[in-house]
Image (cartoon, rainbow, N blue to C red; front, side, top):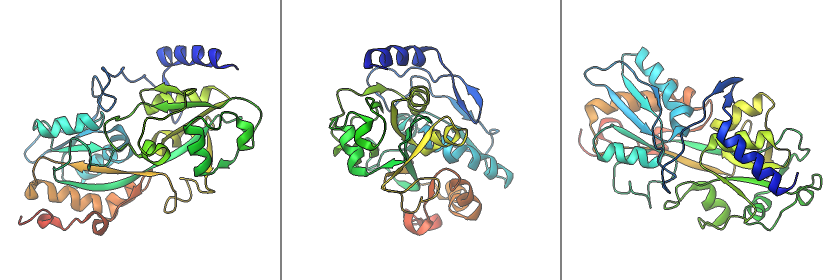
Length: 309
């Protein structure tokens, strides 16, 4: 398939197709507004717990919302806690916290260098950035060096990666251009120097959908979104330097921090949730799709984490 045909079909797919998670069709996310690719035009509610005294609320990156917070909220409720979870992007999380609309803001970009710098925060997990291709592709993996060359447009054909002769249809998410975005930082030193042949999209869902449809497709995407399609056979997971997120998470080379930011530390209300999150039950939930972070690694010390309780 030539590039013109790929772009034509890709555009149609983005406009019309739902995506599936675990075989269940899901509606396409709304288009993003303007150039702010870290903010959704309309944040989608994922789970809203019953309101009540002491309830906490989360808004922010869908990676963390879907990768852990939704299930953490359900389990936390079973122990008597209350947490409302709403998805979105990094800037949704920052805006919600700064406007006092949510207790926690979720970020998939580092806090340092973002509009959240200076706010109290805790790293709660590490996201794994999976390298995925169409299931018909016979390439088993590539090196980080090769992936950087693909990103910059210096490798343009799958034959240079050990595959069949066909152009690499690289699908790239336009993501947090003003922040230190983990994939862009790892592959391009955080500069927007993507290949001129790349197809740019706005969401992780669009990456996995397009790569699953086109035999020449290649994408780098959160394991949270890749895993259901890999497990259902709709995507091929490529090893990176011989390592895969489904079996080598402690050594996987392409990751990014997932953080919770807040306007102010409210020890009485927030400590029970963080005790749960960093405890055994919370860690088991986080481990399903993400790399857990221990309380020691996060610098969490209970009620006194940010000074006197």
